[in-house]
Image 1 (cartoon, rainbow over the protein chains, first blue to last red):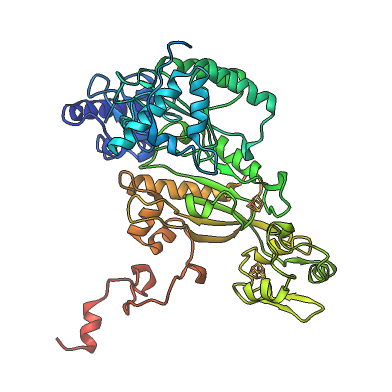
Image 2 (tube, each protein chain N blue to C red):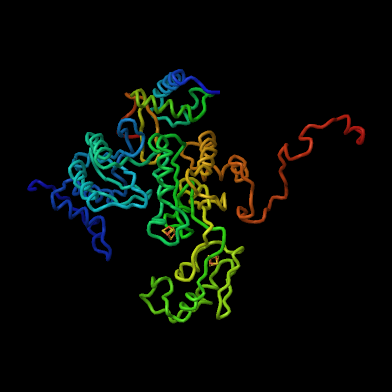
Length: 78
Length: 428
Ligand code: SF4
Ligand code: SF4
């Protein structure tokens, strides 16, 4: 079932913001939980768009990439 | 230059003593000619040797707009001692297929990097990329602009992305190549731009393409999807040239081991007896190969390249799931498809890739490579996902488990049965 992208983005952002208070970095798999009906590819596309809109940000160790919410956690380290 | 600050680095200096040139020499030379960053790098390395701990922080939020890969954030955790490397990010640049450059291009690239970064390169990183080591956060966007506008180059993959596909030199220079490795590498790179630049997966995914089973890019040991050139017909034999090797007129291995006297070439000992499937025969006049038994190991062809050549009916062997040891130890990839025709637009490999990615994105755990997922779920599950039948080449050893597991669709009538029918024959 295809989900509405804007709707999905809203859900991801809500989920990530809620979670960021406890854990500032999330794996893409964590974001799948924002909407169990969405396919992994849809979540990935929506999350990457949120980064483009500066609502989420990437954190990369070089080997793995995680997502964060701007303003939470230390931008320089895990 | 007068205010260059040199650090005392006795342990790093040890590296300069061996017979081989060392990165420590290179960094020192550059540091002495005015790069404080290189001197600070050596200083921090010395401190790491002393403390037996890294002094780089782990990763960071750096990148260029719209990209989620290609830049690896590096910050020193001793910025007061080593201010020139307080922020010292790495950029991965997608190398041209088979790494062909003109010197003019390289000079221009060096000038740009001297201007905007440390001037230190790694040609090339083990993934295949051109690696630019060391710049500040402010320089990232200008570098990206220069790369894309002046050099026609793009960032490569890092993090949980598709990593920059890489290939051997292939038909451009190598007579063994059964594939146009560069064309395949380029096509996959262009097809999967989104996956390359934006994280999509539980962890990294790598394509590597070798033109023949010599596998010069070590695809079999390192990639999630190894595409290795092979042939289906017969090894081409030039019997006269075989004779010339036997008579000592041609040098075995094209003279590659001639730095030592190995005695006269012995075809029986050096070729026939070393064939892993024992499918070669030499009667003193004629070389015979039972091609049905040949495993395409390349040994005989490597030893006598003027006499033997791969066949003409060419394609690729596809293997899945190699990885380095994070979970479960290092693992070579597993043969999945013995022969796949590789012709533009390479639909078959792309269809396979879609099936693999959908499954891995759904089922893979955080930081779990495809090879580990296959290990966890079992090869039979993987084969079902990619819609392939098991073949004898996939069997590692005879099974020790005496049970046979059936799937419902394999059993006539499935799991449901009529109890009435059963009771007609069997009393309760
Ligand atoms: S892998 Fe084979 S085709 Fe490619 S460069 Fe090596 S020997 Fe040549
Ligand atoms: S390629 Fe290897 S297996 Fe095939 S004939 Fe030559 S030595 Fe034997």
